[in-house]
Length: 354
Image (tube, rainbow, N blue to C red; front, top):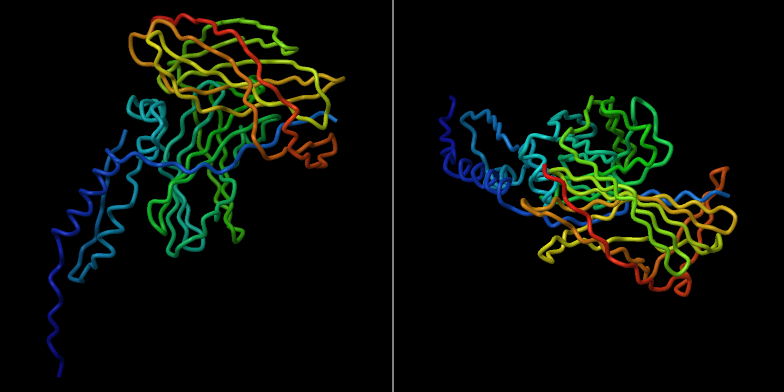
């Protein structure tokens, strides 16, 4: 004789509240990002749309499951929740490409959320969800990329993750390519993410450069304390400011130079936050040759000019890696006496009417 079993009542209000909480988090919660190094070593010569689908039967859904629902990111929300005004603004203005492609290996699902191609910089947002808790550095240095199936000659970048729960995290990868001719206006972007246990998630998607970019030739030069600095170009877009520079300075191979950074304020003295940017350093006949593209937040409306102050960023510790023509790596110790403060002069750039 079969026994009658009474199932617990399905907690509709809990699930609805969890979904609503998730949507509120996707709209309002700023993410505290934890940086992890993805930057390749210098080369030395020698809109949020919620689509939620639940299949509900007569089974009981636990409060733990309802809590997990509230932590799942909504497709298109990684840039919005990044805490970076440029990415948020670009996403809200529809300048990013929503991808939404997911691959699952060993119970780990990786989703390419959206991509922004702004000038020579690529930014990719991803979501990782697993059945089991993963180690903090499970995805190592993050995403690698190709352009039409080929790796760029010289590139650098960064990768950061935000842990939403023990099984859910998001990541943002940036890539800077120094050879402009390698960055066509549109191309097939290849992406690869490797896991700690040998998993390899691969994606491919066509992308196009946004057109909302205004380039301003600057050609500002300074020569101070043996450093020759040339700021050639500044570009403005909804996703932020990009500044291109080159510099030369005397030195020796075993003492890599400190990087040159820039402090920018608007006409009212308000700082425009910097997000640094990768770079290249070449050593030739006793001279270091530096080049880089620096990234900053977008400017506010009605800003008519920006004031730029270059400075030498002196490290307080660490070290570097020299790579010779055969790919052999030599680790160089940190030398605190190798760098000194340099007083560059500030200069002004007029903001074009957009």
